[in-house]
Image 1 (cartoon, rainbow, N blue to C red):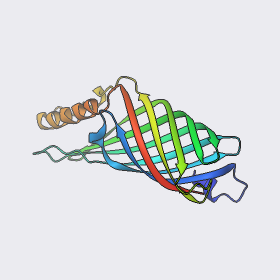
Image 2 (image 1 turned 60 degrees about the horizontal axis):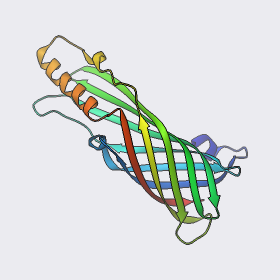
Image 3 (image 1 turned 180 degrees about the vertical axis):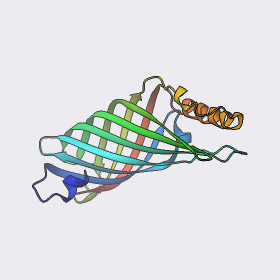
Length: 190
């Protein structure tokens, strides 16, 4: 996306969207603060791509020294059906998550990836097709394969094992196999 934005060659995008969103993902909200930044581009022919980064929380366990951090990104590939300012984006949503844990000096990470269909409706506030404030609503249904946290077994130390078990449980409990989600966005369309 950054390459397309700053490239000196002609860019395929007819429309650029920059926005702030409020995401909701069933069973996963303990991972997130309700805020994400979004950027998208769509071509003249209707194909498009968008990306967003979620604001995430840090998980700590009372009485322990470690932390569990998360980075989370969404990528969408879609086909845009539009009638002047009314736009429907139909496509695939991918949510990439990486948990980074640290217990004293021992570090570990775990990837959790979701994928599934999405549909989004958006329109502009003043009725211009570009250079106007827009709002949108996205609905998605994503799923992941079974989350294997056996690779988290890091040490024989019982204190570490207790903290480690807490992190394993947190990741399993906050990443259900299937998720229905909603995102409300407001932004600027170029």
